[in-house]
Length: 219
Length: 190
Image (cartoon, rainbow over all chains, first blue to last red; front, top):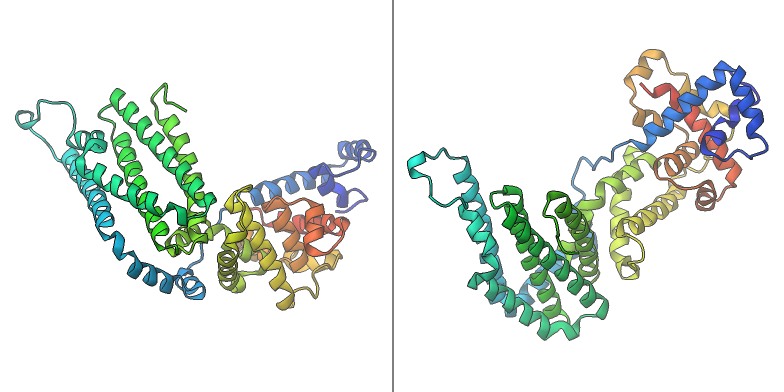
């Protein structure tokens, strides 16, 4: 099957056919079943192409890339130079671990059958109390404050664009924390919100830790 | 934005925005030498870049090209300006790396053979073999020129003028190659 219009069908499909030629092709389509079929198939090919899923490589390419760009040695060097921030970093890690442990414990409690007699009188779950008041937790506050001090001390070593990005992201995370807390006030038993809040708090610590390390290692 | 009506949809929007901004922070950190931030960027984008490389050049070159793209990206991170999304920047870089490699692979020999018969191998396989081919496999068997134009236009969304510029051809050739590729692939839809 081929006629003078067949090779123009893709252009027609894409809207690339000159306006002067469109009426003639459309008139042809009215009377040519083969071209109508072909046009429908071409449409399906385009739709199929746009629906293809991306697949990752079967092997992890990161180790080879890391060797090429030398990030392994960079990380090792940075780890040695990070010694001056060991205390706040350890504090941050401790808080993150506490959050993870609290979340796991809460999930375990939620899954365990609880007899009515042993059920707590409060309707708030243990992690809710933990997470909801976590910002007021002295250890969390101390870790955040320590990292913020390190960052403030070293921020002059960072370029302004980096500082802007860090501050913007801290603001976004703080807002997400506030939003999650507001939402939890309305729906205290919502496990998604609890986990989301814990995740955002961990994210804040991680960003602060990275920023502090970056500010500290810049010379 | 303050949360006036607490709900998951609002939080999801915030999460999307946070993810985008976290990526911007990772780019800044990676540009400053943070290998872990760069690894996060790699993990986020490797599937898309590898798929692009595989579709453009074939499975056997995809791993090597993907590594090249990320090595190049690492060295060029300082030139990234946040006017575009990092993914868009990386994708453009990948197309350039892949097309540059194409010449060293010698794949340009029959790139732009404009005749219909170059597609015969794809279009006229026995019916049973057709059934065993999935769409991606059929795509891989297209001649290089038709495959590259198809990938760039129908999968990646480039315009013919951009493709012509990238491949060093005229837009008319790009349109013709695209049509030939589609005509061949329509037999492998099922």
